[in-house]
Image 1 (cartoon, rainbow, N blue to C red):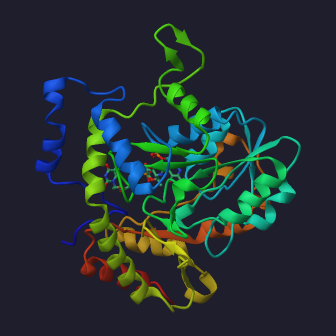
Image 2: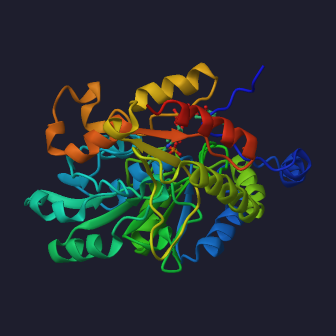
Image 3: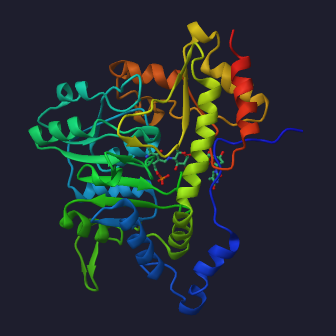
Length: 369
Ligand code: T4K
């Protein structure tokens, strides 16, 4: 009986290491609300990411939602539909209108040549996604933002460990939002962070994550509860100690996939971008049915029949979600539509063995006609 293989598997420290980290809580009884672990984790992240300002949140989604609120973004936000639900929902839940920009066919990030034509007098921000850890054209996005006086909010959920021109992705844009969800390269069980430039924005996020409370008797913002608790912070602290080893292992898995699948007619692999230190977060494969002889769905089903859980990240596009009742015209993002119908992300995590990668590749290649 062959093992079930899921798209990812959470990285965890040894139980002893985690217990050691959480033990002091049985003395202090301090479990949440910006405790000792929260502050320690925040300092470790500040150093690892080489950023001046960072705050911790319950998850990557609240990082996005509260960033939009703290930056006082209103009206239209130019964004991508080729992403997880969170990105678009964070915009809509702030009462803003997402305006969808198409993506590049090679790295799946926002096609910057299309941004300016989408700007109106209602536009107040650009919210791009470094999807799969692929770095957006940050220089051009910033140039456009400066020209039109727009804020830039990066959804950096996939980029923990990625550096571009030597800088972490937390250092680009007005804010950059990380996710430390269990399924990410680096996790704190659930968790997220916002890196920000403007201290006032940071103060606002700090209040908004704690119900908008400014002081014991002053509540001057309509906030949420998005505080990272001490158990999550402790998990983040432990996992951060092992991140470098994790990345080495992920690199090995990625290289094996590349060896097996590059050069196959009808299969497009994720690009290796110049000036980027990658984090090997995902292994997306885009199929061209005419050349490969089988569709993405054929391959998905062939893998599923062998208990291999590849995922259609990101299908459907967010601008086609039922909750939006046909409000957006998907024909305006044709490249995103085409990629979302043809992409499959193959299993990738640090402990995936070479034999398992080979088994997955054998099944993928057996679909070729
Ligand atoms: N922006 C972007 C671009 C994002 O991709 C995300 C999240 C966000 C923002 C929001 O960040 P967070 O608020 O989540 O911090 C998963 C994750 O839940 C989600 O965090 C992630 N993106 C998205 C791409 O993937 P699902 O619904 O696919 O997860 P699920 O439960 O099917 O898990 C996938 C696989 O992971 C499982 O088959 C096995 C493994 N797994 C899962 C869990 C929950 C584990 O090994 N351990 C676990 O605890 O959404």
